[in-house]
Image (cartoon, rainbow, N blue to C red; front, side, top):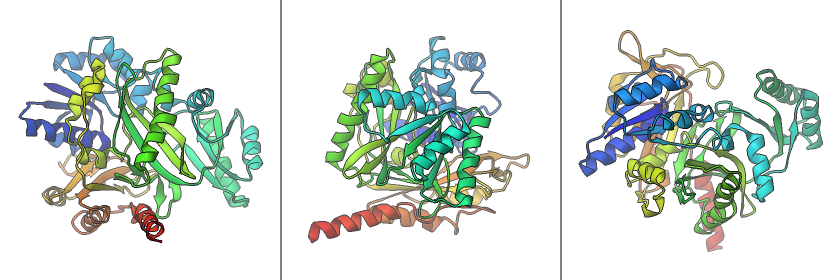
Length: 444
């Protein structure tokens, strides 16, 4: 069987790794291809970095020429511009939502209206169509709000105002709002700022609307420790997260996941693929921060090292409308992923910085550790170098969350390092403190 993965980040490397790993275990022969891929994916797949994921005729011709059986789309951008629609029209089997369905991520305004209509819990909001309107909505909330771009912004389309009424704070949020309108990714959504415990909840959805939830996870969006600094695509993740109890899981399915799929179907939109709900748990109730139409990144990395059911089987059953036949099996251990970024990220990352291949190979031999590549490539001297903002995802698996976190950090800065490398030093720390507080309350 031949499988094509669209994308070249840590998420796609983890997807390819899971398919490769589970197929070998089952004795199934799978050949992987990736467009564009990266230096890590190239170790398990044929990569074609020169092909454009937005050039659908070329992609269709490539898939037919290589006799591709299944296509899995990783990033949001190709989904938003209709890669599934275009390739499916050529008779190809593509896992992911159509462009219409992907509006759940590509338009914040679209999904906010849908949630309001269906009564799905989320923050109250206003929509601003110009700078003055947006500033007014921010002031009305006492400078205590989340400002979001309507359209896609590579995971960096959110600015958090924390009630600071200083000139410096005003300059920052005004600059962000100006960027929204100048780059035409508006209108701007001004939301009440939700305070609580954040979590990521992903599920597979088949063509008949059947929802198969994954284990919960937690992302870390801010660049700096303590959830400070600018927003990023994600600096690390853990799975599972104790924030999502069995009771909370059931609430999320009942109040959020089933209603949003129903709301889409009521609009004549059949949603197939990955449904991701970014959540804030406030006073033991889940509220939606955002929906994504694909696997979260970096959450996919800890999830894929824990998922024991072959991913390829799940995606095939999803396209066939037979997801109810699948049982997800998970490694009971905890996983933690720490993302290593290039100097300058999330602004203008410095590219071309060498990463020692020997260090990467040494790291890959450590039991319970996987290093997933994101922004990496090989230069003219065949060295692995940085090619993007988020470079590597060090993902560790161990019996306890604390142990998996320690294992990941032990590798970073000793065996694995590169010039200008930046990373958070508190991935999973908040969850550990959450667990300690819960235990104290339980024993009190």
